[in-house]
Image 1 (cartoon, rainbow, N blue to C red):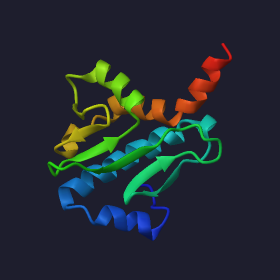
Image 2: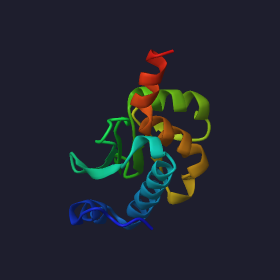
Image 3: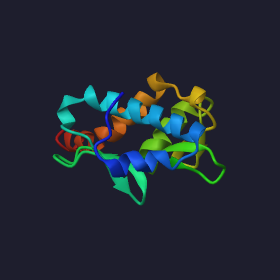
Image 4: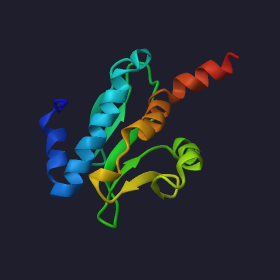
Length: 137
């Protein structure tokens, strides 16, 4: 398990009801595990933006922001940039539930499929690096 970077971030997870918190902690682990396998992005920062746990790469600004939170239905979600979620959605329309092109929504921790989600997370964490590389080709 990954340690929380601050008491504020840990407290942000603690306010969620048990089943939601468990799912969000699992998603957090997937994000941090994927990030650990991407040395080109540098250190991932885990912080709060708008009260939501947020993941970004401040040193080289390689990433676009990922966030974790709850949706109105009481389910939990992985929020990402619409361009990244839209591409993921075209490939996984039947595998996940989506809130438009803003988030992947989960009813339970059992719906989390790290191997599939790692593609979305990798793409989000390397988003700006990919744009830079494509500009030079």
